[in-house]
Length: 94
Image (cartoon, rainbow, N blue to C red; front, side):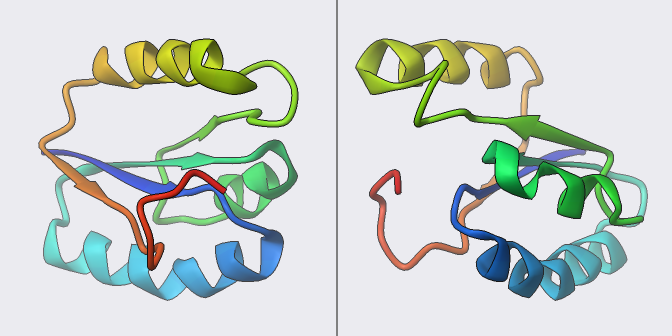
């Protein structure tokens, strides 16, 4: 199973997401877990033993605006995720 966790918030929120990633890994032990994150938090997720890949979404630079959002959506769709989880309280892209 392929699982994507979307966490595009600041480093503090990224750190608070680590226990969630651990629980997902425990519930789905043979799954691939990727995280969509901002460049500033990539190293946090790269260091986690529960993350297979940290995919950066540079929403302030390279993927800025609607065209950038469409590019990143196209990129992540290639991975055929079975589950997508967003721990954000809203559907906004921060």
